[in-house]
Length: 347
Image (cartoon, rainbow, N blue to C red; front, side):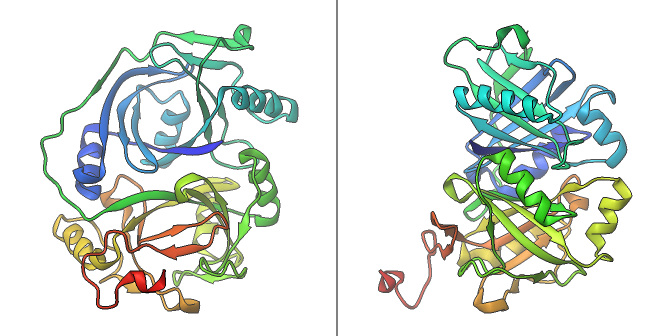
């Protein structure tokens, strides 16, 4: 199982596509696919699929307010709607059967997308995890549970889009999503069961020392991470202080969990240049300049982009690092152009 994509629900996918091309830069987007009349058996959506490394980004708008995305858009407005987990077909079928046996709120039937030879099912946001998750596979044989599958001739249109705009940004990767929960001990076990892997509790990303993190905005978190390939990860954040702003938002929405923000990582020596590019492009910058994290020797620059200019999504951009198998972070100099001490001194 691997974390595959993050999917947004928006009012105007054309406008949102241009926003994200401007935010990320065409040089960091490998391909854009336009989708029309994509039907999962319960809802029809239109939009775009942006192939970025290592996580893809989906931008969709629902045809009406009756389905999952439609109800979310009507109730909460634009923002992060769900994540996609990619599985091999055998694991996909085993996971669906396991979730059904455990009584989790999964789709009544699997949806098979004929034009892509892909199948998927939903784990509804009403489940203990608190957010919707889609599980998908590329099939290599007939489904063993074919009698419990909707075979759909969809989407009606899908095509690669030729982008002519020339927004150029420093090297950026998207590889983390933050989920806030209201009970980190219980939710840690729930998510571990869902994504089939143990969590790493980490307050310090370089030593994996557990502990609390004060985000400086009224939330005191216990951070927990589920690690996937290519340094991708799902971070669970639980605010311990009851009066934390994020707890108030979850309480107002009546949910146990909520997608909080996305994290992008930008080449270390070009963080300030990128900040200035976004500022000049009229993005809403939360901070007056990139901040240098001095907490426990972190040493990363970071800044936030306000959701008012990114279709309801709060973005955090951090100076570049990668994670090893132990989930420990290491500084990434691979795109650094200017330095005084050669990085190879540490080899």
